[in-house]
Image (tube, rainbow, N blue to C red; front, side, top):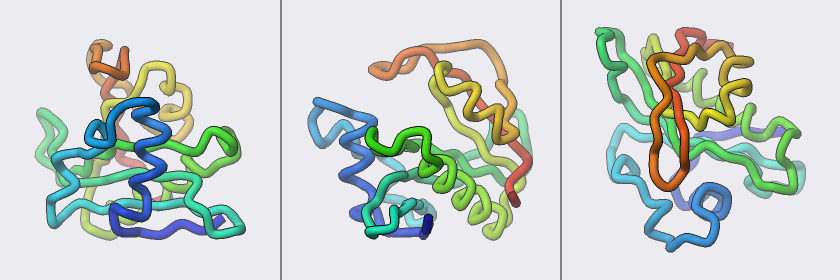
Length: 147
């Protein structure tokens, strides 16, 4: 499985299909996409199709002074879910964060994905909250960026 830092248009269709199923295209556009310091990671199958994606951008962890990157828009295609494409994109993104000088990475992750994040060294911070339209979330933070 290959991963790469890519332009938004390389991962957008997957982000929209997986994370905003049945919703308008604009619902998968993030304000951070226009920033110069944002980066996107794709995970490819053997045929070169994007099967996993994630978007990272600098954003401080509340109460921390360390350089931190937040990620969002992480997902994998339904037909390959559980085969490591989302994990590969996440880990490649964390390594890129470390290369850019970050000490922390974090996300507002779906509560249903807590086991996934915790498996990769993330810790839940604070109480559960609801993000519309995605449902219950937690903040997850890690210092383990260089895996």
